[in-house]
Length: 90
Image 1 (cartoon, rainbow, N blue to C red):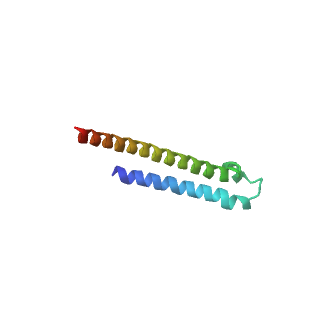
Image 2 (image 1 turned 135 degrees about the vertical axis):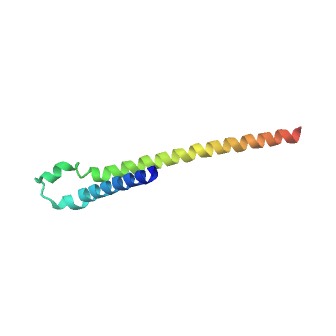
Image 3 (image 1 turned 45 degrees about the horizontal axis):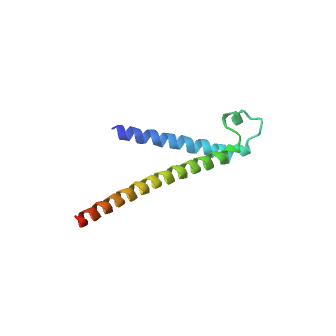
């Protein structure tokens, strides 16, 4: 039951973000600059900056994770090869 609630919450959050961003980028340019709707959104320059920042952080996190996994994997392989070489000598 908890997984369904978590999924529903994630779906609602994603829907809200999609609708907010779509309104901000697609509809707001056609609304007059003095309209109170503009107070609900940040400046339009952030419509480009935010996705770029999020993508850069995501790529950095994935790259760091892969680097850590590869380093640990090579250490395991090296230790395994050292242990196998030690058994052959004995």
